[in-house]
Length: 304
Image (cartoon, rainbow, N blue to C red; front, side, top):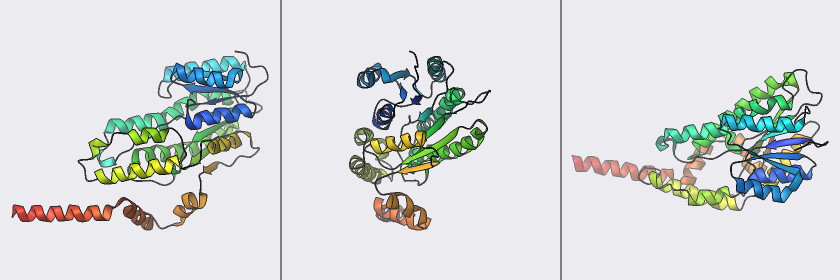
């Protein structure tokens, strides 16, 4: 690979959904795009679509050795030039009530969505200009957060934890990287129509059925799949990423959703107990508490 005069960007999790949309948007904007994938079939599909404007990097964000190898490959391609951008998009969502969530699943959530993001950032930061002598035009880092990094939802506690932490880590990183002139921008999407909802529909929640949360988990799953599939496509997130990388003075946070007032502004203005009450109503927790209380009373009477 030779770089010619093209500016290059790295996008992690490029195989489908938001990542693939980012690749398409950035290629259209004139960038050469490196996209991280884990399967050869995904790499072949993206190469066929974008041709000489795209190159795959094979790594999982939790694999330090593979991430380092990917950074070395990009460095060789750059031939001393500066990487224009790093889009930390890769991530997963591990659902389930926190009271019953297996701890290894929580660790997996944080390893991918938080620790993996920093691992990738550390590997590619020197190429973005975090080195001496300072780069004349340093690159930018885009962190793919979520509305779930600002507002927590039942049964997404592990995902919320990873995104809340990512927001804090990104703020600290942005302030630290000022010494190199590297900006860090957070993208905060709401629900977006991607293949993730097919996975959500087929997810096995049977291990929660014997808990108090079983019916509510199923209700939330059905609602989320329906809402997710009717949400805007990943192209609107890709447009925000493109803006974050190309605007002269990009916003530090870019919320992306169908109705910003209802999905972003209003929840931030409402008293927290009101939000809790609305959530309770949506999931039917009041009726659940009544049933549990009735069962408890009957058990005490039978035992007496």
